[in-house]
Amino acid sequence: TAADLANAVNAFIAYCKAEALNINYKKSKVLHFTRSRKLKLEPLKITGGYLEKVKAFKYLGLIFTYNLSWTTHLQSAFLAATTTSNAIVRFYHQKGGKHLPAAIQIFNAKVVPKLLYGCEVWTTAISGNLDRPLHMFLRSLSGVPRCVSGAALRLEFAQPSIARRAWSRAISYTLHLLASDARIRGGFSNLILRDIHNSPWKTTINLKFRSLLNLNCKTVLNLECISPVALPLIKKKLQQLDFSNTASCARGPCSGLALAIPPLKGSLYTASQFLRRLSEGLLPVPVSTVFLQQFCRVAIPEFPSQTEHAPVMTRPWRLWNM
Image (cartoon, rainbow, N blue to C red; front, side, top):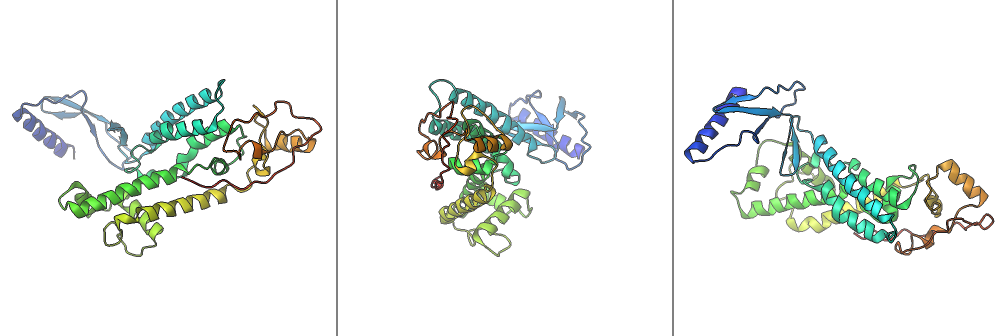
């Protein structure tokens, strides 16, 4: 209750005074975690002043909200990732750019960490929506229309989903907690794993481990069910599932890439425009000369021939090396 919180804060203030410490009331906030939709934001009266109540608070890069949702944090991460991604795209389209390996490498080094920051904590929010910045970035580089599925782009560029990368980091962190729990019985991880409260984080991690390892035990967050050396096997299973889901979702994309033909230079065309250009023989060189050579610099003719039609070529997907 508010009275209990005020008493606890007053006791903390008394402790700080006894230790010759000062509290910055301007930077100190009160965040009340509740499922109620009606949140009272009256300041909390304490000894020596008031503490402001807020709906969200940013701590160590994570935005915590009163309703225990990670939507605000993910929106902030998406905004930061999109800003950096757009800067990379602008630099890519400048003179002297047009090198796909470098652009993708910069994206993985600068944008992906912004999306995955703190993913070890917000496992309940891991979903396919995390791939939107990646899909927008790949679509801007390749110049394909919006009707092309993001899964087809990830498969073409050999990029794993952001959700898979988030689960890989979260599982690595959990196994690290299990290993430290075995070494230090009185550590912080010991308190988290042995807490009788089934938090959403523990429930989500349990379900993920059970699905990946095909375990039947109700609680798998212990060394009796999971060994820390199982991390390579779990990551391999994640990779296989991600590739399988991506390949199944990438079928039938509305794009020339489905026919192994790239789009015209500097143009975004719809499905009807693509079919018209295909019937009139206005499409440029086949995609094998553009994409198959590991994204090397290949000049696409700006004005394709009106009579010569590039043959449709099939090519195998590149290896899914991560």
